[in-house]
Amino acid sequence: MDKVGVILMMYMIILRILELFLSKLNTERLLKDGAKEFYPFHYKFIVIFHSIFLVFFLFKSFGDNSINFKFLIFFCFLQFLRFKIIYDLGKFWTTRIIVIDKPLINTWIFRTFRHPNYILVFLEVVTICLIFND
Image (cartoon, rainbow, N blue to C red):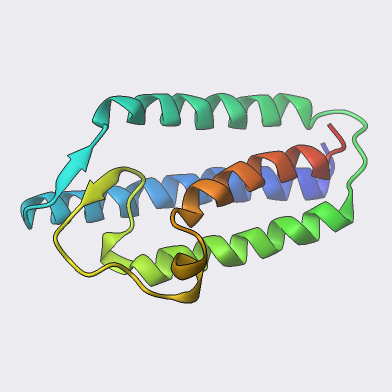
């Protein structure tokens, strides 16, 4: 794995860990405020998927993979969108489906896409594979 691969892998692992801490904090706060979690059963499958993807990415990234910088730039744009979504949702952002009786977030990304985080995660997984031409 070259330096870009190592940096990208470390970034993804650290970001996911930080997101899990933030999500746990927000989830506990929302549930305490009367929110309701929907489809809690599916959450473990999302965690398993992300874990398998990160392990697969780690092993596939070793070797003679060339970096596609167009997709790396697109990945950086996706990260901007990720942080925008987390910022826009603020204390309501979690990795779970939690609903509380509050007005919907009405920023441009949420007016354009009903569930932008799901789209973002899908694009992120595909883009990471394309960065390493897999």
